[in-house]
Image 1 (spheres, rainbow, N blue to C red):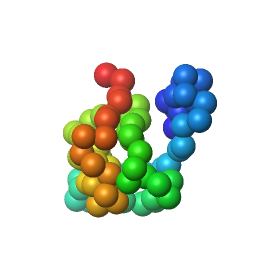
Image 2: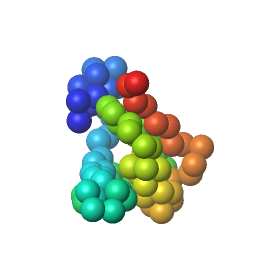
Image 3: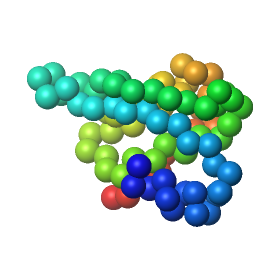
Length: 82
């Protein structure tokens, strides 16, 4: 969520969805905990905003979730700060 204000500042009409993925401390695997996407997500260009990437597993799961919701791969972009 820390990157959202900057996005809204440059694209005021951006629709915001949420995907919360957390790493299971016992298995080290990512787990989907929360999902709320705009209804027309399959027709949209989607930016995944991830302030920190450790292993990339959560980002890969987020991409998989979007693909499962019929977002074309070529319409998905990942934005992160390194």
